[in-house]
Length: 360
Ligand SMILES: O=C(O)C(=O)C[C@]1(C(=O)O)C=C[C@@H](O)C=C1
Image (cartoon, rainbow, N blue to C red; front, side, top):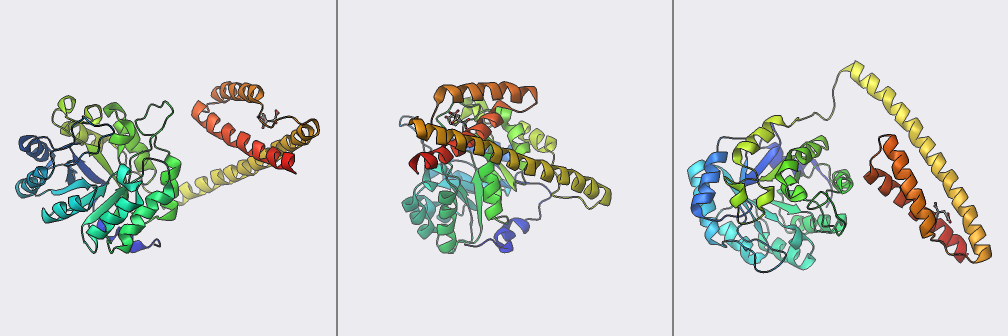
């Protein structure tokens, strides 16, 4: 699959003056709940009404969705409000039922994207459909697996495609439910700049108070839309209560978000920008020179270690460097997260260099 302008035709055809918005409850609970939320979202920026019908849960015993019955409620939503509808599908049977109930947009969840077998089954079931199909990133930060899932759909003749960035599972403690790994989303855009990319701040944050911030970051990174879980009574939701917002909050979020342009035609702005970019280029070259210099010292240490048969990894020294650099970085306005990831990468390169020397 190659990038091409036509990949975003379905989105361009909507002629929106704001990012695409998909909203609605995490789970369809009752017909009354679904319709109430839909009516509250009817005259807002929301383009697609979402509701989970089949809910993949990490452990058994939690609410697993109302099943096919919920599709009838979504049909009612469309009939009563005129809103387009969407839901998650996780196998060929779900696809068949969703298509039979004329669901307008289907998305494939993170736990399905990880499995090429399931993705192929879903792709075969969707063969040739003109419905919009969005693929969430797999739970692990694996860009090839994510793109591979989308490619299976493309090869099955699904042309109205897109992706949803919902963050990645992590073993490390984090303020996020699923860490965003923005770099991966940027890489995704580098590979497929015209494939619509939607952000899911609800699943990234797991907390409603962080949804605005993550949404703004996504828009600043040129995402095409947002999927935000919305419930009339978020605290009483049957699933993911902490991350849902009320329809009124959603409206406020959409009002407060700054939608920025990709560029600006003004000459003065572009001159100033180019001057600053030249400075960045200069500093970037200095960084490379300094890194090469540091690596040369690491190579010399490698030679010493080889002579005396000493191990590459020196945990105590490494811990000292990290601690010192975190303090140093903080005093210069650099976050601990940044210092850690940068120095971990430097250390790894140093280890790779010394490893080669010791093996030579
Ligand atoms: O101090 C050392 O022993 C080194 O080899 C240098 C270095 C580094 O790059 O800073 C590399 C590997 C060790 O684990 C610790 C530190």
